[in-house]
Length: 195
Image (cartoon, rainbow, N blue to C red; front, side):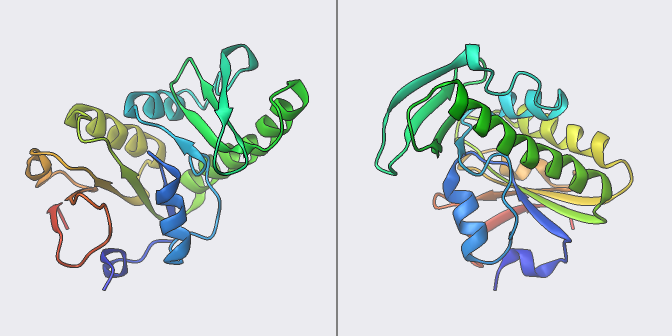
């Protein structure tokens, strides 16, 4: 049984750290929509928090991006140097101003969808896979940003992270930390949070 089946959510939104999360959510039919962080690697939660808080201002500005290499997914790997966020699947042809503009137009749709869902959906689940070294304070910051955007609407934040502090979130509303090296929704995994 999936942990997500314990509660009902109008929408499940992946907040990265890597594209495998988006693949997993679609595979399990937990998310049918595409979201802004789906094809991205966002190893730094602080950058994700800043982007959401600032409504993605400066996100992948042409002056801040760097083409890294052609990858195994028949795409160019492109990094936003200002945030550290990397795209692996969005640039199937060389990086030029035209392909960049198409990328930005597509991502604006996902950004608008994110904020529309945050504003209008009655019940949301946000899911994030953190690096093992991500400090708890950044996860709490993300929670506070989501609270300020959601106002009084219901939401939960599931965070998968291999760390020693997952039990520190017990009693904090809306957050569930899962300690699991594979970050899979395994019914046997340890989880911590308030119900």
